[in-house]
Length: 83
Length: 346
Image (cartoon, each protein chain N blue to C red):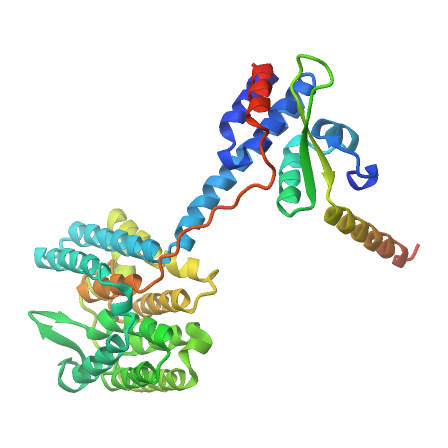
């Protein structure tokens, strides 16, 4: 999902809603990706007053490259399987 | 039902400090998610997972990054459990006193500087003493493995494990020669258990051991296998691994637990690239295996100060590396922003 949003920042809750992945799975995954240098995070100020700021995520250049490679491999594997 | 904001506060408390940014990220997202309870509960699970992994990881780091401290601690704990076994099974008080004295002496040996222990002199002295024991030592049923120094001492158990580590560190012609002489002496005595331990340790040491010492140890072990070794077992010394279980629950648990503890550094050594920690693990793994298979002393958890001394001296030869702490690359917010965020969570 992060690979498909063209480098835009995404929030954790939005990722959960759009992918159906559970938050208990998402955050450990984000932490691992960040530790490997594949994900960057930033704090964004609240849009509405009185709300807390939010942590947003996007793939780093390295993460985007890896996602593209994985996606290409998946496509290749898909084509190799006879219909 | 727990309110999502309470869960958010719990997450801030549960997650360890090095992942504080992630705890704050989850807490703020719970509030931003307009109190979606399911999302909040998932975040709490993730937070608890982080806490468990970090706590477990730190414990593993401590033991695997500090081989010397880990091995010394394991040796002392195993020997203390051995005292429990001896005490509960009615062993003579002199045996308990000898084991307790060996713990104290071994801990004093740990204070000896590592460079002194890991010297050519240690390997040469060991080789000389093993040869002297084979020629002049106290013999029982055809085996000459002991020296009588007030109490019976088995020099191969006391000194060989440290001498092997000295050889792996120094890798000199002198230490290699000492390993060959030690192998010859073990074949002469004969001592199948320690010849096997020497071979296992040198194989675990890999290239650092050198081909000649490995060949000599293999030949010595083969000779001990061919020679008759039907020394009868001695109560509280040999066959302890099996007899302890038959003597009661507590003695059985003390011996099994103690053996597991003394082998713990060997298990950590499996994931270690260092030749010396691997060799330490292989030495004591082989000694325990010999005790399980034949009438050989059960190290640390049975009677026998030689093994206690030998284990602690060898443990003192291991490196004492400080643990390195990983740093989360995702930074927490600046202080002012952090205060503001936590205020909004309140």
